[in-house]
Amino acid sequence: MTASLFAAGLRAVVANLPAMLPAKDDHWRRAWGPIACGLPILGWVVWENGPWVGLIVLFAGMSALRWPVRYLLRGPRAQFRRGV
Image (cartoon, rainbow, N blue to C red; front, side):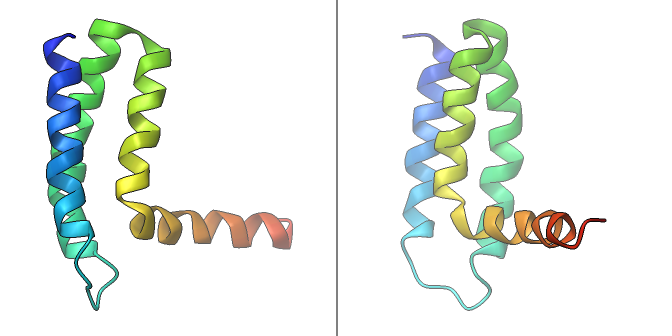
């Protein structure tokens, strides 16, 4: 296992701990830290292991941040339905 995959796994564990607790703001305040740490780690994983492993790590990170991802995708989805 490469160091980048170990860092991605550690980030996944650390990001999932606060995601299990209830939040009134749909986890936005708790999401900024994992997002800020996850992007460089994702780039590192892609650099060392290739784009396919990077996609797997990206989807794993998105599953931990499910509420922020839903809100970010809500805008483009509404525009697509309107035909804009």
